[in-house]
Image (cartoon, rainbow over all chains, first blue to last red; front, side):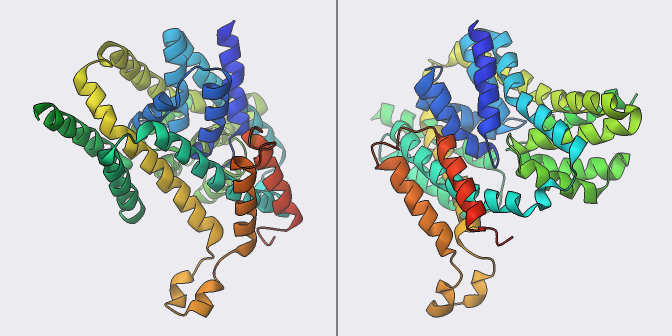
Length: 178
Length: 205
């Protein structure tokens, strides 16, 4: 029964995601962490990090992780199908009916408004995740370095994720030696 | 058999595009050139629609391309079959790779090495999310061409979108400080912003 609930919840997340995978984060926080307790904020951060440097779409990767955590392989497949289900239906219907949907004036106005909201929601998520992810001075240093580099240097995020993991291992082993 | 080929093409797109939905775009462009299933102009339209409908952009794009390609074969049933095969093809590698990683994490997640790797990784992950937010913010609050203003403060101020900034401040207060509204589901604020965008013609359209 919980599998069905997971499918429906992830389908709901899919419907509510406007403007790309990152916009999904605030919705995931509300539905997965706060409402259903299927994962913690900390785990969500981990999944996003791994999702950034593994093949495929981050939103899908995160869904697979949470499904697997609760119900193994079947769970992972069910949540993934849940998150893509709304896209399948909505795009098929739209593509069948109108082709220049995005040229409608009210659609582009609405999305200009939504993008403002997405910024604010992502900011709120970052504040929340910061509390569980950045524990000390080293955490602040890694956060600041990655943020500056990610904004100004145009390279794949994979590099940052790998370097940060290596930095974590080095820092921890140096601390252990003291 | 076009559907098998569609599945295969999207499977390899899903396997090799790392880092989010828009990373699939170069693969789709090449697919257009190589297969002739759709044109680059069609692809641009599909991207616009995928960005302005709910759901992850990469998934929307796959569904759209599959729908269009399948439709050239068997009409509507072909379209639906095409949408399904392309989307499932795209997510299949993710499912496989993530299930393997998740299984390994279950086994080694408590090891010191993995724990210290995550200790470094978490702040980086939050920073990447913040940078994604920042790039949306630049697009939303600053009008294009701001670099031409150089250091002329008067001109510089003209490049900010004040209506967007006012909306953002209101949303920030509603989502963080007002007791009655901060517990509301995020979708409420998205809906509100969409309405504001339409009423005040945020895109100028």
